[in-house]
Length: 275
Image 1 (cartoon, rainbow, N blue to C red):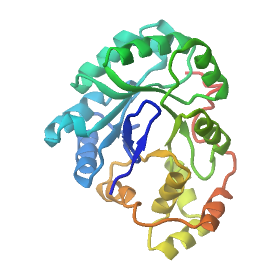
Image 2: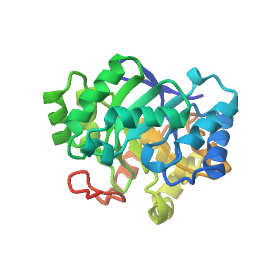
Image 3: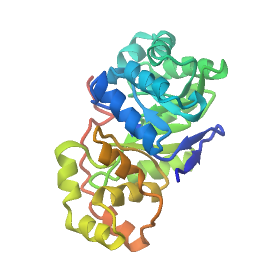
Image 4: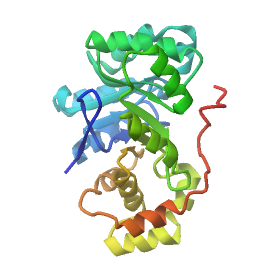
């Protein structure tokens, strides 16, 4: 049974969503979204930079599920942040998705000009085109800058977090500010995911609960009160990633998983990214 998280603006967001980063436009994305919706997902996370918004929109329409039941997230890319084209970029995403509103719109990275982009997003929020506005890959210093300029506190900050890079200090900061932490690459991604899921401690904990190592890690994220965005194009994994609501890790298990932290990112540092 899917859980929802109540954001600071009163919006309810499903605790787990399907991510489509690096999922190829066309059949691959459409099939992944269809499988997810069939499995019970009601939260799909895309971005302009992923180049698959049209495929996400098509799969959602083809599903026959009422639009209001599906939570759609997309993101404003750095190029449009820097060029001051937030409004145009938003409506372009709206057109590609084939919908008349977005549930959650995020600034993808704190590119130069993000403060002005945020003010434009606040207007779109007030006009009803966006249900919730938030950010992605923002550190405390970026959030401080928004607090000075903006009227609203971001509802969400989507950040990198996994057992090799728990990012717990930032997660604690977000909770203190009333911002919901949402995690990307929850399983570390790529080759690091294989390494992570082979960790003996995860295998041992998984065996105890009759779960997979991936399910244990996703449950660890949930019990840290985060929203989780696992990505997969495999039907069995998409289904498995949602099967995490029927068990609870002990405090000791949570500590063991947290002890895997190496402070190692798999993505760019928001303070030094160059794209």
